[in-house]
Image (tube, rainbow, N blue to C red; front, top):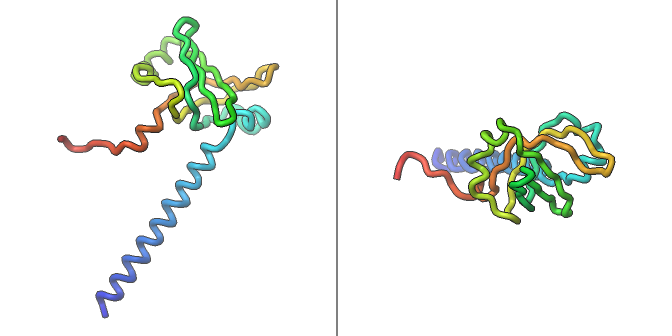
Length: 140
């Protein structure tokens, strides 16, 4: 009888943990489905907030020091990467950039231009593939 109760208890704990993890994934998914146009349209709600979106790399302009990402509706956001501190902060991320690849891009929303383009400050970007590949811990 004790084994049966223990089995039921373990099953219930696993079920609760699964529900909890699913709800966390739902929250992450909600954050990542915001479009750049949604932010532009509701700039007062998003101004000065730090946002992380899943975007694709469109282009890196090394001459004018700009990096461009786009969302699922092909709306672009261009970040200035010319500041010395920013270059140091993102230097490692700049080594393996691939156009068309998904990135989790974190930025601070600042304003909207007269043409409706979102103005923001780039904080970081991380390839989504790194979330899929398990981390190696503790040696070989």
